[in-house]
Length: 419
Image (cartoon, rainbow, N blue to C red; front, side):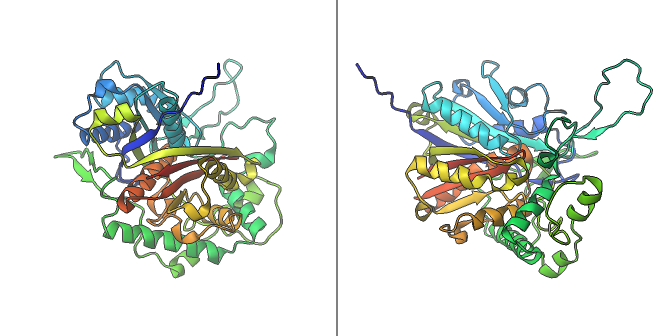
């Protein structure tokens, strides 16, 4: 006898996020486990009919894990948020897509019947990422020791790794610019539009449904609420961006000796790349039975996922195939999309992906701005993107959207949502 197992429908019930703080900015004094706990508390406060004891697992993405978010930040955040001790938690790491990976894993558990209700999200405090000092393999070494920053990128690299794969992330963006002949001017113009779209979205209160202010403790007096993304520049201009020096190419040749085409000066700057940031996001996922327990109308449903991998030094192009696979699983094409949120690690990386999607309409890309303007708190960004897509679909009342990110070391992840 053949038995057909039907997957459960997975609903994205609600999604919240903190405002995104700049490096050493408004959230610098807030621990990452407290940031994640705040997002979870705020999420559940919006669904008072739900008994938190019914949540069957908490999935949190985190890309660092070397500092205050060690010891399984998902479990710590759940406890700090006041969830019953009976609610478990697991931390997942797919670098920049860790938050989206948490959503994927939670959705998969619900789809196969392992859970009716789950929380998913992500957190990163790049400001508070610690320095690490590796242990020596011999006692009492006489030589100097090297201290590594865990804020971003490669550290303690395995000497057996192909050196082309371990070049700086920005140098990878330069390689994409070389490959697709993307100019500095094109990158600056893309970054400018990201800031202008994000500023317009703030002005129109489009983030109000997803952003939950964070009370930031002060040295004296009451906590001060931090309520808006800190890196958005309404006054951004091409003139100002043109004055910025390249951040990677000129230095990388001398410092890293990375093999690459000799293509003149660099094009990737602090103005056309995402900044370093702090932030957290949380989402509530459910099947039909779980949805009834929430008493809520869902924002959207999750219909497909896609993951891909490519050469590590072209990691920024990996979303191309991840999105293609996810759309194929959902039975959709680019013409079916209302919105596509592609994380803006670098303008060159996004423009490279667009060059490989000739049938995609860029008018629906990141309509409320992207990470160049809003920020990129590594482990939180994927969860933010999923929530942002869901809220846009809910405002529209119908449609299909995609959230996707590139991932260091050469991977891409994508999620399809429908309403």
